[in-house]
Image (cartoon, rainbow, N blue to C red):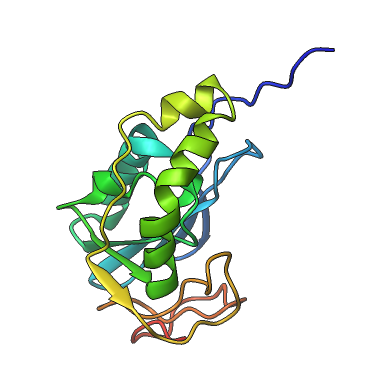
Length: 181
């Protein structure tokens, strides 16, 4: 019986979908270990949600985000600490403020190294994507309440300067102000 080989978990920005003004998703194209990556724009800043697995994917996401931001300040957060969501954050250093909740920061620090090794065992394409990964230290760690639940103690929520308000299920235009929990 043939062994299942995972496809290369590469992020592609060819089919980006605009869900609302200043709200876009880079879709996962149903490729295992590729997350849907979100960009949420405000008047003065753009929040990028997830990096893709490894530095090469994160470089693709950062280039797209910088073009999308068009001079606005970039922020990066991740839905949780797994490699396909957060193990490209190092690429954003000096280009974006990396902010995550305390539970994710602790998971990244304590469990991150083991996850690199575990995911490398999923196949050659995954191991290649993880080459050169350095676990990034967040610029901002926050302790706010979180709406919903994530895989590492809380879903991403909070606020960043200049962003438009978004709530779960709100696909219409932003109402101004900061994003609230």
